[in-house]
Amino acid sequence: MPDAISDQTTQRPQLHIGDAAPNFAARTTMGQVSLSDYRGRWLVLFSHPADFTPVCTTEFVALSRAAGRFAALDCALLAVSVDSLYSHLAWVRAIRDGFGVTVSFPIVEDPSMVVGRAYGMIADGARDASTMRSTFFIDPAGIIRAMTCYPATVGRAVDEMLRVVAALQRVDADDVVTPEGWQPGGDVLLPPEVHQDAMLASTGIETWFHRIAPGGAK
Ligand code: BEZ
Image (cartoon, rainbow, N blue to C red; front, side):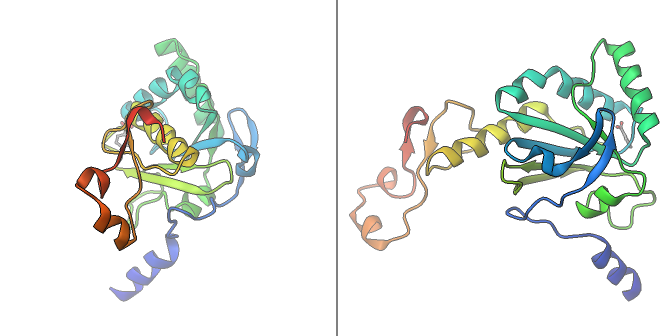
């Protein structure tokens, strides 16, 4: 069905790591917000499929409980779904009443799907307009530095979201890369050598392609 295929490719933008995060202005549970308001801070922009659903509720409770850990990284949170502002507000109240947790970040209403479409948060061929569990890690210059996308059925891990922000900040601080499972304060690695002189002078992998910088120091 060529028409459907071409519809899908025109409908869904291809955002990549390194792209400028598309700007938008929208109503949220904490007032009017523009993406550009977050310039100068790290931002995790994330979509959830729908208010008043079980997995999304666990994510919102966990993210709100982790508010201090995100603040310690100077990282703001901004949620978005196609639900109306009134639905968001009622859900915030239900979370407060049911879990004793006050949602600590704004939730964008996106009933017209302007944000969802700009960020490709709505699955190709989806039967409804609900957004996937998309997460965009945006740096203080407004550049997308990492992205994840989970289905509605699988909740995200807040510890991993925090770890990604900390890792991006670590690699920005020095010319290093972070290994598998890196945690703040842990060993990092030096980027691979790209000149054959350095490679030929090496005496083993620890001076060639596995150069550890202990204790996170350069
Ligand atoms: C949930 O958050 O639990 C959920 C949302 C949409 C579809 C399935 C599950």
